Image (cartoon, rainbow, N blue to C red; front, side):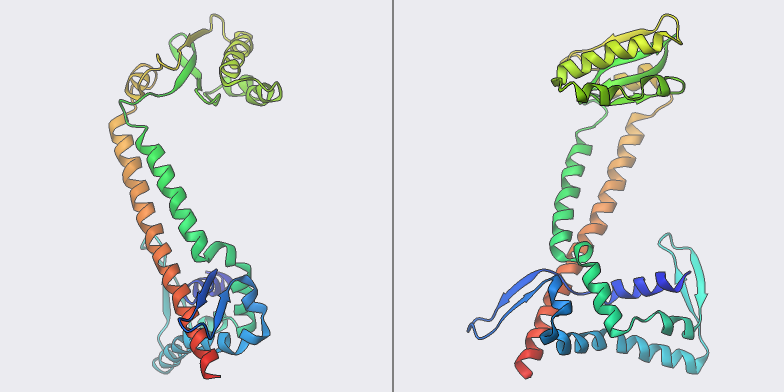
Length: 276
């Protein structure tokens, strides 16, 4: 594992800054923690103390390992064992205070708590959309291109195209063509189906086009049974939902940790300013 990756991992573990406004109850002090705080000279002393509070315990642990001759094994996200690193390598991976400030400032948009909360909201939206794709819900397919009972591609309700094999090159660019014409949704679908059939006919004799209105679109189960008979829609749906739930649970944990980090840094700096 490269030391840069190790340093970044340590940075995430020690990470703290995010957008947060705080005002004490007696209105004596007002602290606004945002991206600019890491280059604010008046905050440097408090941030240095915070940095030391995060990294000094790690340095102490490394010192103990150095005495015992231990190495540190990095375990990967999938649980497998990664590269073993020496104490010296881990020491080099600890960023200096100034480097830490740079890393905090540059990663602010990724690791701040507002971003985490917004990301969690997006995850929930995606989850809701995924749940709408149940086996017996509408596939929202508006047209299917086929040849000799083999599917070549299909058009969805939003004008998207999914293609297979040799049909891919022939149907490429149809969405972009339709977009340039500023067509309505229904006009876009009709345009793609008409042009798609013409293009496919140049290579496939007797191309079949099955068209559906929005109310006639087959369910996911019906669509799979006709065109993808080896696809288990129930198992695929269950697996997809389970995976998304696991991902969202991980992100929720991340969002909570980010909020805790925000509160911790705010309290630490406020106390440092009060003691100064």
